[in-house]
Image 1 (cartoon, one colour):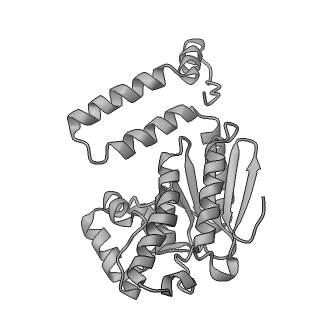
Image 2: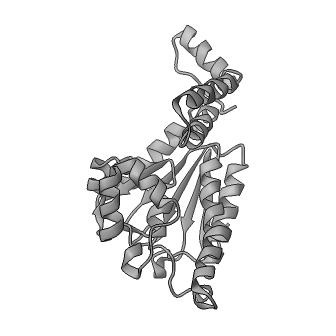
Image 3: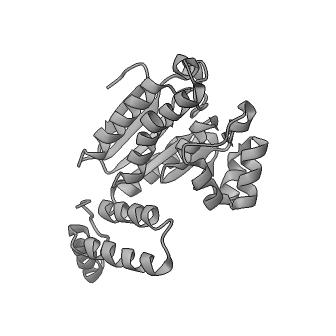
Length: 263
């Protein structure tokens, strides 16, 4: 499927979504978010797809909200922003969070504003060394949204997160990796291969276990220790009923590499 906003590809067990507004550095609009949500839901519901890659075309991952979008300047701007978040951004972010398979963000160039937090919403972020991340919101008198105030302090600590949010300074990918904000920073000419290798590894892994890990981390964010122990118990019981667990045990006994089916 190809359209003005996205390119959706399938290769074996890997689905790839490319934001496709290179002339606007893949800046986000409501139609793009609608199509992104539909593409994520389509891949999430496809049992043949076991990992999803999200990237951008051209020289940027995503420059954030397209501030030229007319809907932002009609009537009450506060109501328009709230409507965009509730009706367009949040469904995309929740689809990623609730998808029972891993999502990899492949970042080249800038990931700014909502584009930065869209990348951080993914399960793995791999970036080119020349890439950078920017919480750009205070440059236009706003505060971070798209989950940034939730995810960033958990990734880099409150002090560093406050500085990134308030000072709105670009953070190079290598520093982002050193801070634990992203999974890996790679030389530009190795990014494609690095993402492909990770996607292949995940596609061959126990997909059900990955989904349960995502649930445990998401649902446990506000839970106390005792509640988290209960959650782990319940999810582990679910995992123990899977075909992948049976295969894992069999492979261990036979001293071979498991051949997970994702079921």
